[in-house]
Length: 401
Image (cartoon, rainbow, N blue to C red; front, top):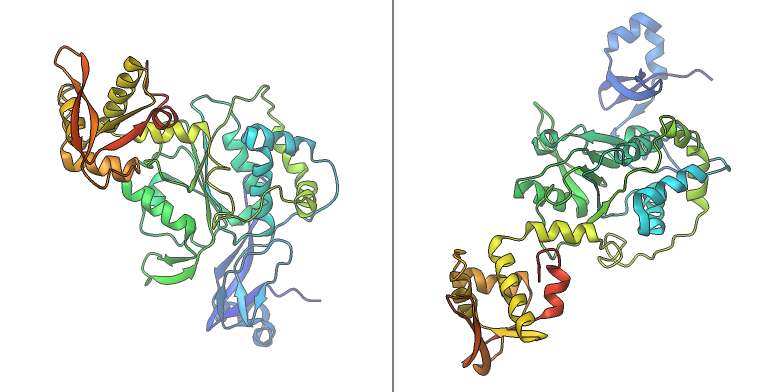
């Protein structure tokens, strides 16, 4: 059967071409083609053979891919490898190296990418200040599996208003990420859960498209590559250890196992259930690396107040301390940390999610004197109660008691 490399979408003609890559593979891309050129190359009658579509659509599928949907041309790229039973030993070892104690959840993540590409998933963050950990190899391996459906971005390209090159991709990977602006964090948080995005290309009007992209961030900056707060549930932060042994042919070995790994993912039973919009619960994907990241993002007022409260509890062997915002303000003034009552109320209620007493009640108020001594006096107020367990859970890296 004659293979027609051209298509007509709406009133425009395109040619499907295979663009060679340095790695020796080919990327299938669509290139605008002139109708007169087709006539010159193949004759006028060839135009009648060109498949015609009403427009473009993007419907991701890896197991049951269809190029046409109700007269629309599907621009999602089919995978080049076909599943085939075989050994996946190196692949499983690599997944275990990357995800560590979250090995089974890591396999679930990859399985969901392959079998349920429209499922919303957490923002996967691979961090390590050491070199030779395999973070970049992991991205290259995913690129070899998902091919044209994965793209790399830089910090600058993600912050750009133009997104036509990645708005229809399954995986958007940003290496050496450093989002030091809050609006970039808000943008990636929004995109990680939305199913709609505005596609914008240079010289063209914005248009609304369905969005199913998942983000993977890699960074050597473990504690401040992105600004997130303590209540954030969309980030899965994993510290990747150094590879025990460096193998220059490791990526080639992983690539050779891709057909077998795809077969493995097709037939493996998921270890987790669909419990949240991002499949995994916050508790399932909570890690020590996430805690360190959150702690480092806390402002000086919060850290200093936590340190004072922990010091008071340790001195008097207490499991909790009662305080009003004014008590905190007076204590912080002794440390020359500038703040105000409004910020402290917001800190206690919003950031620490504590509730104060409904009425003015008696409590033991702590007082920090100029010489550093601490005493308790009787007081009345709508106080908050801070538990020691809360501080040890959220500020364990900040305490030197």
